[in-house]
Length: 335
Image (cartoon, rainbow, N blue to C red; front, top):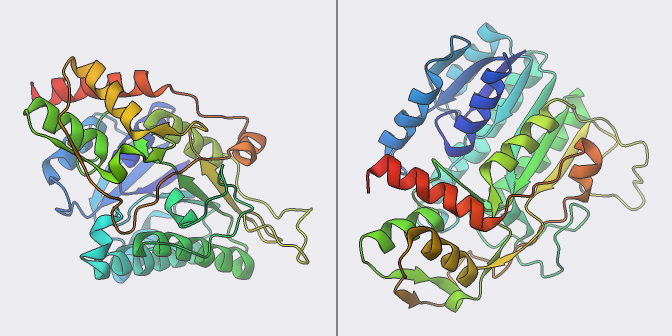
């Protein structure tokens, strides 16, 4: 198949591309290589993809309407994995326009590209952050997600609504994946694992929000990619059991699906830090702070729908996943 991956220089994008290239797919990757975090890390990820003759990279921003139109018209992709987005909850409080441009305008351009060029299936990244202020655990796709607590979450919820509209009006199969706190080698420098590891090795204190009482369903990147590709291989279909009298937000009469993809085992932040300390062989100095605006105290994924659809259930233990990240970090930065 000929597959487009947006955000191909990103954390998940690079890992997904590697798996698809290894199985012989033709992959075109796009990324705007912005400086939200160090572009050198993005370029280093792309270096890992360059040896594959079935990979091409094009520097392009998803918010570039004319550029995306031309890309789709020229390339005629069969399937699309849309991972490009302005990420991060806290940054959305500082620069909301970046989220509207990338996550709303950019997603519209991708939907239009798929609609007008007979794309067989669009798989896109949503986020556990759409559950917002919900407190019923674990989070289920059947739950209402109408109370986001950050603009980032609101844009991801908007993506799901926009995807449903295109599935309904144009028969475009779309599948949204609500990622739960992804971590692992080549991860983002703005995420806790990267920040904590860097600070501990440099002898600096780490900022521990909500006084360490946060719980997260940490999900290893290989499990995320396995879920993405299994879903890609099974395009969304209309749900024959969909009941408009009691609608399930995760399915539809249209070829539309939304799935959680998480590790089904929330871990306390303090336990996560202990795993980092163990992998590094040194203790952290902790700066305990209150919950930050836009953050939620806990996340937990019900992945039964994903498992029923694909036969897959994430399962990487946090201790092993953190160990693999630390090994990569020490090697990459030679520390």
